[in-house]
Length: 395
Image (spheres, rainbow, N blue to C red):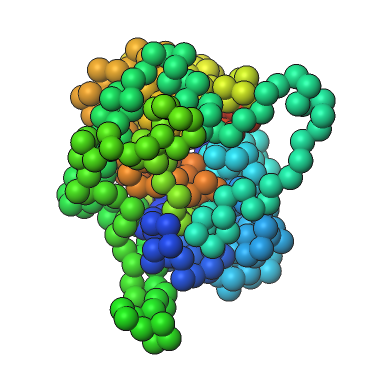
């Protein structure tokens, strides 16, 4: 901490409601959704967008509507001055946690004073994998590269996780998310999105709609319904659509400011970043690096697991979270509701490039709801990485 010139304050953290696959948000472009999110963010904080120096934007599938440096295009779409710069970051599922890292590091070092970090993924409109490319033969000679679902299956096998374990976890994710929605836990972090959607029973008439509530949660599911689903990746396997993260649409944003800039603009920070950690692991098994990334982030923050009152672990697959709980001995903390208390990628959905900022917004809100001080958010990443960030609540 001694090398830092300033704190990296989280002034505010927001997101769109998450739209299910081919649902409400499938009728709007990602840059248009993102523009509403960042405009909602600056309106809430009362700042002039011209004060923003850079917009760091996560996006995994950078093709078609999400191509051409969507980070810069979000600022332009939002109607902000051309002086507001923008860039697009791809660390796969960890993209907008990486933009948090980038923004905080720029502020800590004194290079920037006000940055918006975030991301978007419109998976209904720009399908996952549609920007697929090739890999060097040198990689294939060293590693058996497989799809993430295969890695999720291998994690389930290596950590002795049963199909019942995975389905029980997934069911609880839906129940927690439904409860969070009903209790209004997400209302502070959600920026409603205005868009035109086709009227029921009409393919041509459009109706102006305000979309404000996450729509992917399966309230009526049961463990029995989940048990009836067929394996998605391996015959006789354990990983199904029910215990995997959902394909969805969404955007999220975090405003990060230096102490001097926050004081100058009269901003009241909600939290601050204390440390980040990244980890590289076997690109075949690929999804098991969360414990290592968290250990490194905690070490940078000078804290331990005992200090963490809220823990967010992206629900890429149920097996990933259960492996994390096993390796960190935090199973009882999940049972008690300290880990993913409001559901996650299985229930709310995982809009790839937006999820890091989304879980940051949810973490900050949950720390405030509990009056808790410290929290951590972590995400596994395709091709064998993980990233984590530690947050301290201030307000």
